[in-house]
Amino acid sequence: MINTATSSIRPTRDDGAWTLSRGDVMRLPIGPGPRELRVLEGRVWVTQQGALQMPSDDYWLEAGDALELPSGAELVVEAWPSARFQLLVTPAACRAQRARRVSPWSAIGQRLVAA
Image 1: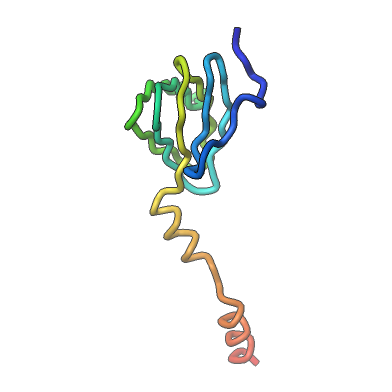
Image 2 (image 1 turned 180 degrees about the vertical axis):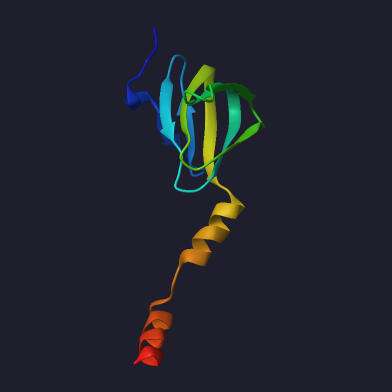
């Protein structure tokens, strides 16, 4: 029997990892920005949502494995039999986020120059 209750799916410790127990299934939307799913312990079965033109992809990941995920991806993650994993922001996503930030002081300066 598949356990879809979220009460047993929880982040653990200070490393931000998620724990999945036997039979736990987790729907995981990705974004904004790309992410990396890194398995710390155990094994997971990951299904990435497909579309009419592109069928879904399935991946088996074990401790030490990582999977790069594009922004907007939809995943279903299941533990086999149990697992711990992290969902990490990629360095590229961090650079893109920094580039979008605007200092309030630079915005004021731009308004003064325009006046």
